[in-house]
Length: 143
Image (cartoon, rainbow, N blue to C red; front, side, top):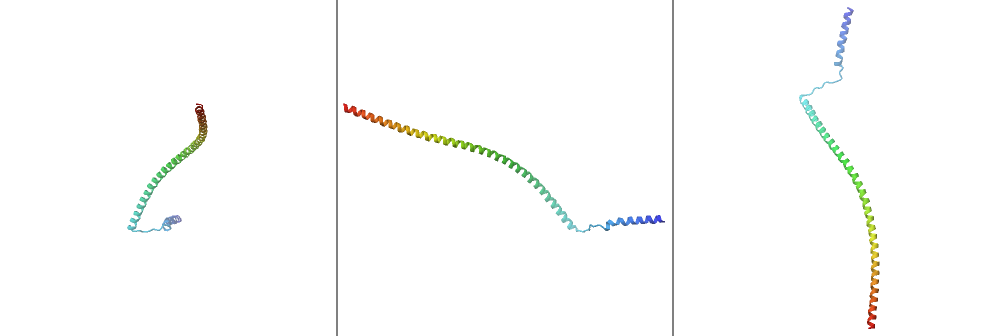
């Protein structure tokens, strides 16, 4: 008999313990109408569509960003190349300006020499005219 009481107590204890989760549940049950359920379903569908669109736009923007970064890298390389060319051209320009200044200086020296030579030639010509005039004068006077 003690054994039967023990089995009954154990069975009763197991039965009581099996109802505890249902009684102690922290989750509350809510009831919603079919209209509210449809509205929730529409909202979820709309949110899924928005999410899909945003994923697509995000992927597109990511591709555009990668393309822009590639173009920026290329532009940076071209900028560096153009800066190097500009530096070389500046050096060339400085060399050409120096050559032009030298040519101008030499041209001014040549001009000064030519003026001096021209003055000297005029002086010689004038002396020759004076000598010729004197020779003609003395030749006419002797006759």
